[in-house]
Length: 95
Image 1 (cartoon, rainbow, N blue to C red):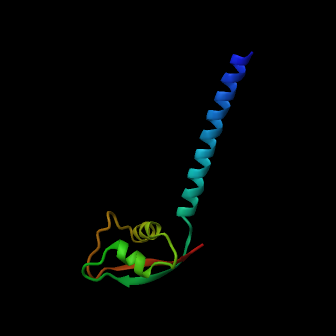
Image 2 (cartoon, rainbow, N blue to C red):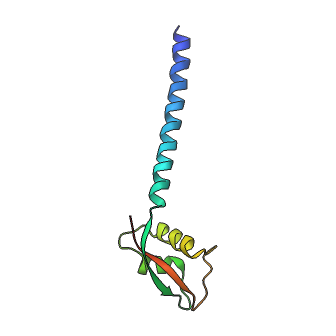
Image 3 (spheres, rainbow, N blue to C red):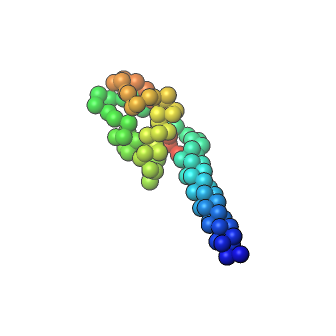
């Protein structure tokens, strides 16, 4: 009996841990894709990077990585390629 109980306990432990990991992943994914409710236009200057733009002009106290991802998504930018003079949208707030 103890061998069956031990095997069941181990299986339930593995299932429980898997469920917890999946829920944590889904929770962070939902937070990362918060809706952008307001944007502002920005004209790219020579030497600008997405990281610098996100830190300088993005929402206060926002995670810079998420702001960069939002700028890339809003403007369909692949790989952070910016052109001087290009006008991009920057998230001003999120809900």
